[in-house]
Image (cartoon, rainbow, N blue to C red):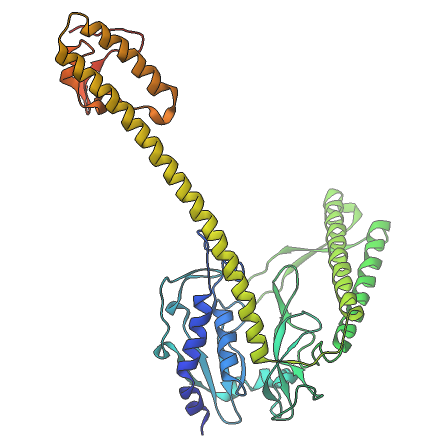
Length: 424
C-alpha cells in the first residue's frame, strides 16, 4: 500500500485526535490556557496526529519563526504534508490565538499534500534521528538534556521495550524555565534518559566549560585586563556587513558604559549557566534505569493530567459562577428593597392627596423628608423623584412645581429633605 493510501485511510482518526486536543483547550476571558498560554493549539494538534500516524516516519514542518506547526510524513519514495489549517479551529496571528467556539473538525479538514521528497533530504542528512534505516516506533522517551518527551526511532522495525538502540527524534531545545525554543537540542539522535545519562553528562561537560570561560572573562573585565571592547554601532544595509567600533579607556564614559553592560551581561549568563548545571547534575544524581514508554501509555498519562486540569478548571469556573450568582442575587435583593421603598412612599403620598385633610400637606412634608433621608442613606436605595411617577399627586401636596427649564424626566422641580417647598 502506498504512503498516500495509508494517510488517506487515517483521515478520520487524524481528525478525531485533533478534535480531542481542541475539546480540551480551555481559555479564560483573557484568552489564556494553563498549558498553551495565549498561543494556539497547533503544536499539540500536530503531536496528536503524529501519535495516530504511529510507525509512519514523520518530521516537523515549517521553518524558524513560523506561526504554525504541522507534520511531514515520508517513506523511501514519497513525502506528504499532513496538516489541519489553524483557521479551522483558531483565529489570530503570531503567538496570540483564540479558539473558535463549538468547532467540529472533520476528515475533510485534514490536508494531505504531496511535496518533493528531495526538499527534506538535507535535514534528514543533518539529523541522525532521521536517517533512512531508523524506523519511527510506538515508543516515547525523555530527553536527558531538555527534559521533553519525544518519539523514539530504532534500527529494528519491531523492537521490545527494553531493546538497546532507541534514539530521540529531531526536536528543538525547549529550555526548562523560560519555555523558549533555542535551536536544535543537543540530544537529537542520542539515547533517551530512561536508558542512559550519557547525553546529559556530555552536555553538562559543555555547560561546565562555558561556565569556566565566562567566569574567566568576568575576571578579565572586572580587573581591567581587557582594554578594548568591540561594540556594534550600526545594523548595516542589505548585503553590507555590520558596523563595529573599538572602544578604549580613552573614549571615556562610552567605554565605561559598555564595560558595565558587558559585566552585567556576563554575570547574567553565569547565573543561567549555574542553574543549568545544577539541573543537569540533579538529573544525573537521581537517575534510575527505566524502560521506555509506549505512545499509548504516554497518551493515558496525558489524559490523566488533562482530566485533573479539566477538573481544576471546572472547579475554578464553578467558584467564579457562584460568585457571579451571589452578586446577582445581592443586586436583585437591593433592587427589590429600593422598589419596596418607592412603593411605600408612593402609597403614602397618594393616600394623603386623596384624604384632602387640612394637615395632609404638613404630613406629606414630614414623610417627604423621611423618604429623602432613607433613600440617601444607602447608595443602592437612591432614586430620582420622577421615577415615583406621581407628579400630579406631588403637585397637589405642594411637593413639586413645574420646571421652568424642563428636560427629559425633569418636567418638575421637587422639595428637598430639609423641607424647602417650591413656589408655583
